[in-house]
Length: 394
Image (tube, rainbow, N blue to C red; front, side):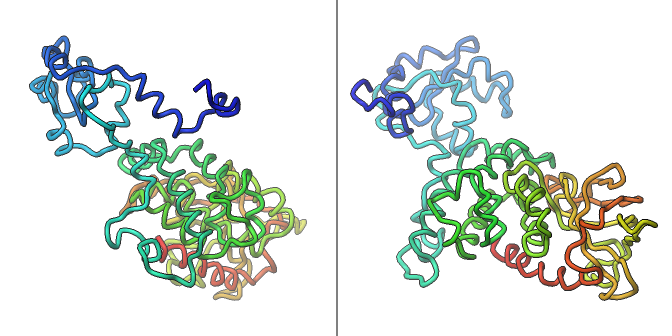
């Protein structure tokens, strides 16, 4: 390492660190491992790596005896018959060393997840030898970069835990998605991409970003197979933020949008009601201007609002006029004591933050109106284009 340039010695990349760590790892013979075969001193072998499970056995989900009966032995076959690859990464702190005759170490779960698969039909056709007029080198570079970024064990652990327990996704991880430009990219092409704090992954320039780039990002997000977590951590933004991008006033784009893109705040779309699901024109939530004509006073409810439990802003469909579509307006409603949310337990995980939203005399400044009063139905229909596009991709 002393022969490396000073900048590499100060911050060595992964491909330099791993060989050094492997060289430093202590090695044992199988005969040495076999001596550690008692409840007070239990080691096992998995893929050539040696783990001290003496203390862990007491909290082993499969029971203490399951581990102790193979203490001092090679447990590789039994391990892979019962566990995912991620388990080894999760409990790497138990590793004591490696067998002297084991050969090269198996790649970590995160390294495997970051690779493009060679299994037929496991990847888009243009990555497996077929030509495409749509996906170019920048799309491939973006896919590789996003996949590597999301392969981090922190994301996997959070996704699996939240999906199983219906708990809220990590705010810190949402912030990391913002830092990586992913929150910006799932909104599609546009000037907002320049708000990504550190640019876009894969070296993609904002001006060259197209909907096929967004497709790549949306596909990679869905590889967790944890749809509740995916919707809760940033999916709700994908259907609420485009209204701000396309119809928001300058102050919204300057004050509200940047923190959302950075992953610091969130926004959801609030249209559906218990009384008006597919029939949007029948919604009942009402907004009435106060005596001074400065604020709308909003009252009503919304149902099945994805991400509503975590939202700082609600892009809300409100009836400001008469019946049917012509009386609907869209406005940006901030979270407040007058805007309350209750979790709805739907068919998938409540990690999505699906909410029943209640507006009780919520004060909404007139400047929070999108476009003109009475033009909300057109905005809703227009916004459905990107929402449906995103849903089809994932």
